[in-house]
Every structure is written in structure tokens, then in C-alpha cells.
Length: 584
Image (tube, rainbow, N blue to C red; front, side, top):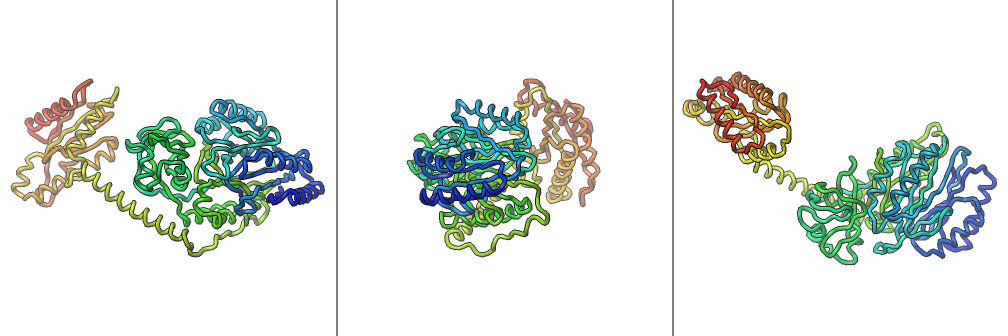
């Protein structure tokens, strides 16, 4: 595999460089000639002219491309049109192009056609996609692609334009045409073709967690019960105007999806404060606003460059979000690109979204850098090298961003820990560290309401003659007995009933909630607790005992009635000589 990269300066220079590439191809054995064309312009005439120039010199070449928000050539950023010629040298390597109209109405037909083509052509190992996406959710599209064979890699990017707020974008191929609502697939494979992929984010979650309380498909309606837009105004003072997309591009949401942490950026905000996303948002998801950390990004780049070096790529394709270009600035964005150029010719473009298959899932990313490294043939002997990213201090704005990101993260972690402690204090008994009465009562109500056909039982216990312990040995020893009982309860639950909950009901009384446990199993747990407590030895009080009542909640029984019944069972245990278990 050999790659030639041409930057479009003027027609004459491009034609001259194309002839040089053509001469090389004619003097070597080539199985496929593929040209990528990336341009910030959506000018149909300009694009067709470039394609005609290429086809005049390479009549059998395969062409595909799209409009972009900037391009990657030789591992650096450029705003000029780029023409990437990849010459595949192995006769076993196959390349095919497909192009379809891409709308919400056609996406199922598109994915069905692609999946069927791949199943009919088992040589396919990788699928590169270029697609227009603005104004539609890509969730169903990505979900449908799960049906592809598990060993087929999928990667690519969303077309864009030079103006971020412009929704116009295009995709084009030599097997189709210039289209503003379209998707193109390049299918590559064969026994001698190899590919490996990865993605890099580097954005860190900042601030507190937000709960998606209301969403409708790709419309994010509420966060924490308030209009979703309010979050951006409250924390970042971003106005709901025509520049909303540009201003929020560097501040995506950070959350877990399909087992990995991803970033998702809103594309617009409606008048009533709803955020429009490029994929569906699920309710009850926990999300945070995120911001880029230069050191995290560069460390990730360093690690991936080292990993890719052992693969010995011959070309590296980069699909990087336009937000990363905004984050670094045009002068510094090459910091995260050039490391891959040291491995192999690196090309690509700045996208409106990035796509990558991870496991069986095709994930739509935002604010992320997707990498696909490719080669033909086996890895040469002694492949790879100890690639090291140059260390050193970050300068200027990158240094300030790094320090601010670290400061905010540390402050957020401290605040979260303080809030967690306050939350724990609100539901926990201070002495025993078990749930307080209010919390265990709430859980009893919740469990009985949601039990369905499963049994729910209660154990109520009371230390026998506890007043005697306090009066004889003092309240400090009484506290030691309560703490010893609480530790025993935790230990028995951990080893015998980990799904159960324990709380201090009041004074020396304790309540155990056992969801899913019937009378027999609950009585067994109660007997283990009774016996375990009687074996404890306290410094002054020596051995103590307790009495226990056990009930199973009846069908349609009010939780208060259940609590009264277990209290009555406990009373009977006290009246029956203490140190025993009574069922009710």
C-alpha cells in the first residue's frame, strides 16, 4: 500500500502532481487506486472539476469524498482541498464503493443494503463511511449496524462545512454523485489487508452530575427537571442564540453509553430550552458537562501512537471533531496529529460527528478523534519502535486550560465528597451507621409497593434488658452494645442476605427489610442474628441477648400494618421469656 497526498493550490500544480502519481502507478503493480477528496467548500462545480481532473488521469480509479471543517494532510492541519491517492499493491485486496440517499426515511434501507452486501462478500474487513447528518438522529442507523459480522471494522465521519453554523454539507463518489443528503461507504478487505482502530477523547467531566429527566428521541428536554438549555446558561453563560452551537462545541456532555464513556454535543437549542442532539438521549442517564485537558489528550495520543507502532501501519486515517480544532486553534491542532504521521502517511478531515465500532456497537462520537490504521501484508520483523511524545511544559492558553481543568476537577471531587457525606448523614443513624428510621421506613414502603409476586419480610429486634445495661454500666457501655449489635447485623447480612437492608428503628430497636425472602428464610436469618448476638462479649456488660419478631407482608397489606404486626411479634417474643424468635 502506497499513499500520495496532494494539496490543492491551483489546477496546473494539481495536474502535474497527478501525472507524477500516475507514472508511479504505471511502473508498479497496483490492484486498486482510491482517491479521497476533502474540501471545506460545498461548491458542486468545484468538486466535479477536481473529480474530472483525477478521472482524466486515472479512468479506473474509485473516488469518494465530502465537505469538511478543515482537512488533515501529512499529519498537519490545512484549510486547502486535499486529494489523497491510496494505491493498493496486493492482488488479494479488494475495494468497493457504495452510495445512498441518507434520510430518516431511507436509513433502514441503507443499512439493510450494506449488511446484505457484506454478508454476500465475506472478504470485507473494514467499512469507512462518510455521511451528512445535520438535522437527523443517527441512533437507529448505528443500532442497525450491529447486524454486521462481528469481525468487520466500521469507522468514519460526518460531513461538515467551513462555517460551523452552516447546516449545508455534501458527500460524493464516482459510483454515485454529489448529494447533500447522502452516505458513502468504502468497503476494503482481502486476506492481505489489515486494519486496527481506536478513539481518543481527553475531555474530562467537570461539575456535578446531571440527570436526564426528560427526553424525546434526539431532543434533550430536561436536566434535573429543568429546561436542558438552563445548564449551559447557568454554568457557562452561553446565550440561546444563533451562535449556540459554536459556543457549546467545546463543552459536550460526558456520559456512559454501551459500556464506554463518550461525548455528545448539542447542535442547537430551541426557544423553549430543549437541546437538539445528533443521537437519541435516554432518560435517567447521568451526564456531566466536560472540557478538554491538554495533558490528558497528549498522554492518550502518546499511548496510542506506541500501540499503533507495533501494527506497522502504511496509512493512518483520522476523523477528528471540529470542536478539537476549535479547542487547540489552527496553529496548535497538529500537536495531536503529527505523532501518527511519524508512523505512516496520515490524512483525514474535521467532522460533525465521528463513528467507530467498539465491540458489536457502532458508536456515534462527538469531540473525539477516531483513528484507523491500515496496511497490506504481514508485520515486518522487528516492527514497532519506542515512540515517545516529546515531554515539556504546555505553553500559553494550553497551560492555563490544563491548570484550570485540574483545579475545577479537584474542587468538584471535594464538593462531591462533601455532598456524599451530607447525603449519608441524612439517611444514616449517627451511632450505628445503619439506616435511620426515616430511611428504612421509606425502603419498606418502596419494597412493598414494587414487590409484585415476590415475598417481602420484616425482622424487628430489641435488646433484652437494655435499660439495665445503661443503668448499671453507663451509657458509654450501652453505646458499645448498640455498635456491637450493628456490626453483627452488617456481617450477617453480608454473608447470608446481601440484598437486605438494616436500620435503627429507635433506641435499642432495629428493623431488617428482606425483599424476596419468605417466612422460612427470614426466620432462619433472624435465628442466625439472635445466636450471633448472644455469643458477643462486651467489656463491662458481658453477654447480652435480644428478642426478635418476624412477619411476611401479606398481599395488598399496608406497610404500616406490616410494621405493626412485626412489632406485635416482637412483643410476644419479649413476653415469652426473651432471647427468642417469634413469627407473626
